[in-house]
Length: 573
Ligand SMILES: Cc1cc2nc3c(=O)[nH]c(=O)nc-3n(C[C@H](O)[C@H](O)[C@H](O)COP(=O)(O)OP(=O)(O)OC[C@H]3O[C@@H](n4cnc5c(N)ncnc54)[C@H](O)[C@@H]3O)c2cc1C
Image 1 (cartoon, rainbow, N blue to C red):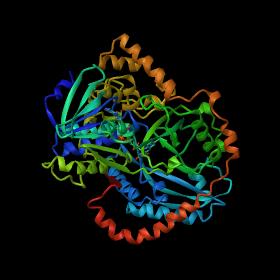
Image 2 (cartoon, helix red, strand yellow):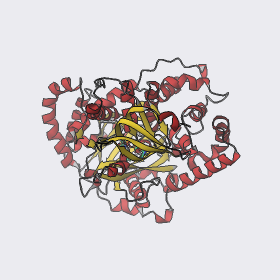
Image 3 (spheres, rainbow, N blue to C red):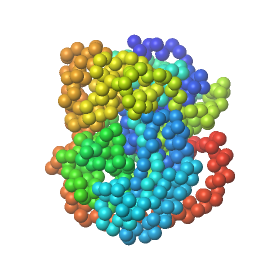
């Protein structure tokens, strides 16, 4: 069985958690020649890392809040990922409108965007007058529109990013097992953590894994393993939810950001994979962390009110939504009243040899991994010095077969998402499988390859995280299930009984957690939009302006040194 292969070996690193944080640490550890094993109790990227806004960004919002270190680290990582991960990380334009009554709106935004661009050593932003801006965002409300800005950021497929990082770590000698959970930690005679008792969730098999360093990369679940060491709870789980609309119904050619008229939080309308994402919310997550999170009726109303206030001409209604998804952010609790004020920095905590790495962003996964290895250094004296300039993603030098069936865009997509395995994926395609799955950019060949080679254990692994049909198509892609069944039968050996069980569990999952709640429970969002006042957020931009002025003076010299050995925005405790 899978686990027994690993029980008689001693590892340098046991990484618990298969989201982007664990994947990144596995990647950097394997690159350094460490013997690494990652265990994930559900599917790779099952947690927050498949439920993000899919942005690879500096986070203009963090700059507005004065978090210069986090923004700098993030924009530099964005630039690196854009350079290395074409087809998986791609540029995305953002639009920000200014309206009458936004005090000093244009100039303060200009200051903020100038700093944002300078941090990345680029000049991507540009101001447009009202007429030109309307061409860029034709459906945005024009009442009082004074113009607006366009600037550059980037986006990805978050779950595929996790998978590519894991795949490259495994190619370098790392090992990764999904559906294996850490049940408890074991300690040596000095009371230091020296491994974990793990359980194969598919077979029920238990095993002990020994390692010189155990890394707790369990995101929002991090307090559980820490409790084994007597650690006080420190994580504040904050839920963020999105609604998804078909692009023909909610057309945006680039992302549009604006302040929610009810509370001034940023809301983004994001084109992604042929659909439009609207998000996010930021609320305390009181539900059981073991259950799949879902959007609440109140969050639906909040996002619909935002749409109605900014895009009233589109007359978007609840029935237009294809799906929804929710993720829970691991944020370090400092007791702030407003969840959005809590820091998004990552932390590395050391408790009796257990290293907990949590918080942070998808964008900065490489920096988080390097910080984790730095913190593990005293336990691994033979470990080579991690190189801050290593690529996050391997260069891909493969010639894709597929001839005239694959256009340039599809080739780029396959190389970005599947890296060195893209050629095998194309070669494994059956006749007709280099065609896109209706309503998506994904090919049928991707589905077959994922089922064959990407550790799929359940139907939702395949349809929610390997290819994202469950998010992109109505009812989770129910109309395609007969053809998907044939692929699963051939590649996974699922018989009729197994298929029926998988299909029924998948349909229930889509109903409970990826659809909209009962209509009757959803508050009157049109009323909320009518009552809402435009939020004047200029004080924060003023802050950014002052900060920016100072930062620009300091940055020129600072950047040159930082580009050689960038540090994340991290607190090591
Ligand atoms: C709504 C939302 C939007 C976001 N948008 C962005 C964005 O646009 N850009 C960006 O850069 N960042 C974004 N983020 C932040 C980013 O998604 C997270 O910081 C990141 O995904 C956290 O990754 P992680 O690996 O630490 O946690 P997770 O992805 O949650 O991974 C932890 C894993 O540990 C596993 N696990 C738990 N307990 C055990 C155990 N005992 N044994 C084995 N495995 C276990 C879980 O199953 C889980 O898969 C967003 C976050 C949210 C919530």
